[in-house]
Image 1 (cartoon, rainbow, N blue to C red):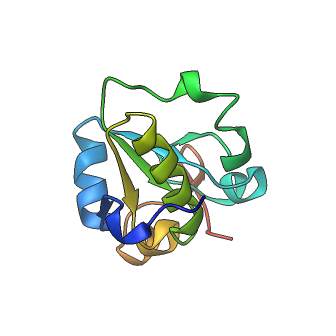
Image 2 (cartoon, rainbow, N blue to C red):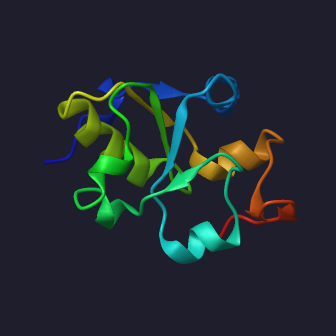
Amino acid sequence: MTPDQTALPEIDPEEAHRLVQAGTFLLDVREDEEWVAGRAPDAVHVAMGSIADRIDVIPKDRTVVCVCRSGSRSAAVTGALVDAGYDVRNLAGGMLAWEASGFPVVAAPGVPGRIV
């Protein structure tokens, strides 16, 4: 079942950045090779296909911002997490929008990254 993406809680990169700076959990659900190439500095990586096996990594006691490359995969994960009782937002436009908004993308701490 595909979640109704019009009903999902979505935020823009500016709001996502503000929330992350305030302590929100940033969940990157992209594949390993995408993560290695470039990510937001404060993100935690749990590939979409591993969410069920690694659900314990995702905190239920704080807001979660979910991100992928363009916002589609993270929308599906956001829908599933909302259904499971999480306080979660989807980053509209994904890492492409994050990068276009001028927010940092790293391959490792202090090493510039790129979105693939």
